Image (cartoon, rainbow, N blue to C red; front, side, top):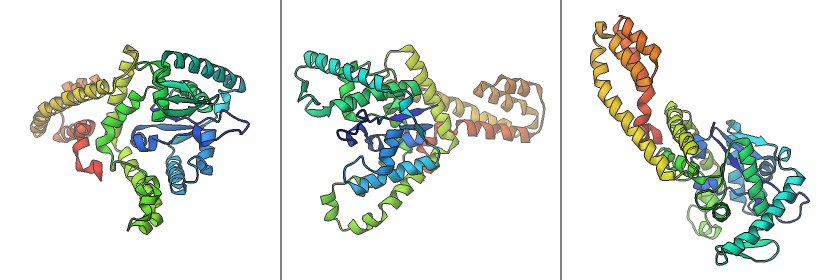
Length: 354
């Protein structure tokens, strides 16, 4: 099952410090195709509370409203799963993570003096980008939760930049490798109905909206536009072709994860394209024969046997070799083959963008 975690854990349970820094919804911009291929989007109770109370993007009401509306739509389709992080991240664990963060900051400043510096007791500057210690604790907690729940982490770019220093460029983390998500994003990008799912009104700078002639239309209708975008994606999500493509990609990632210490986006994409090309050649070679033989009742066993050969189903192959039936059975075998392998050309079909 493809599961992704939206990290969000309030490491300062006493309520001190800011809350919004613990949550990032950058993935809604970077990885909109998550709604296309993820079986479940996991969110901690803290994250979900931040979503429903709209208190994670400061006072930006359109963006807060959009994120809340989008995730409530996803919840209504049973994609969102709320998990209790407190069963795993106890007070004792938080204290250990805090100590680990202190040690890591000290070591990283020593190894990368030109890239990482301590601003004060609460902030670290990484490549000129400031990040607070409490957020670092939340990052570590997110990696633990992702490992325990068998999920990939939807961290922000800032977090991945830190993790590259912490874990090394090729050993980001066992369950925090962004290359897996980037691989899905690259392969599913041709299927997306829009480049983004959030409406421009929600993400554009307010001063630009104020001088736009379409301001009132956008202001009144941006949540409707958001819902239309989501419904388009969810319609595509339900296609059989999507499930078949996911099976192929999952198999590639599982094998590469088992064989190698790290994954490279290009490796995932290239192997998928090779497999796609191989299947395409096989289908193009077999289909003309199947259609031609299907008109002959006496040759009905041939297309059925071929169906078994292509699908790897030995039972079908044996049955095909031993029966003599009508052309109706041959027609059904053609339908089966068409249904099984039409995902090969699915990405370029018109229905994928409607």
